[in-house]
Length: 279
Image 1 (cartoon, rainbow, N blue to C red):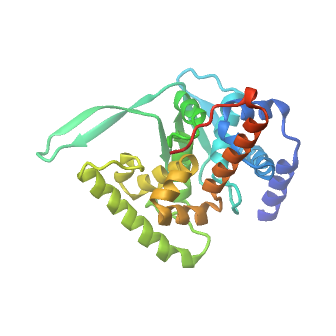
Image 2 (image 1 turned 180 degrees about the horizontal axis):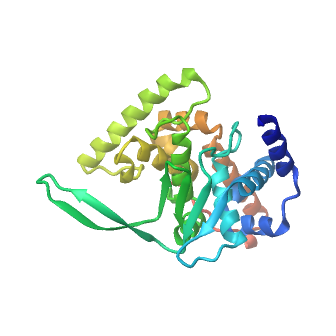
Image 3 (image 1 turned 90 degrees about the vertical axis):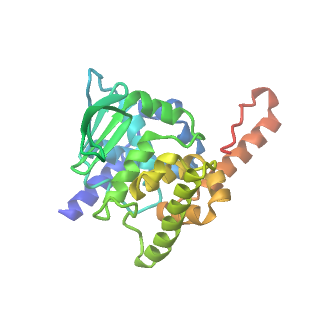
């Protein structure tokens, strides 16, 4: 069974990547431009496996297209580069709304009063095998690769977190020897974030990360991929733990991309693109 799955996945990875999908990557997933040629080929293979194994459905009147499927798959699979992966084994389907959606929420107040209402959401990662996303916010998260906000990275980080058997901010790490340093660094950084927020200090890490350790891991994953230079500068120990887990040096990747752009601009200044540092 496992041998058959491996052979099937290898066959999908080796299939020619459709030209129309490549155009979607180049136009709709700006992060793709930051990748090396080898990483682009690896990502294309992962996308083919992902789209063969996962169902992506439109809700709320959203008509499913290759643009939606490939854009989501690409961003989800960026988190899988360079690592042994089982392609989010607990995930079976991705449900996509056209816009921010609303869910019923019940809250019990300290005095015992129960309040009911509706809460708007951009995405959710469910334990029972589904991720829910807002297509508007998928597009918004993809277009700016330096703002530290990417709903696909966030929700699929939750899926990785759950592969350890619990959604507690500690995913299944590559080696047992890594857990001690991970617990020490993440516990301290989480406490630091809460303390900084309580004292109204500015933070690189989104305040939403103070919700609980699981949200902290998802939020710092967004920063690791989209604001790696700032994360490495301000939180070097945290950056290092994420580098070891994801097996990607995102700060070096971004710095290398900026160098290439600077060289190209110097050689041909009339075609210079605007440069945006990650802060």
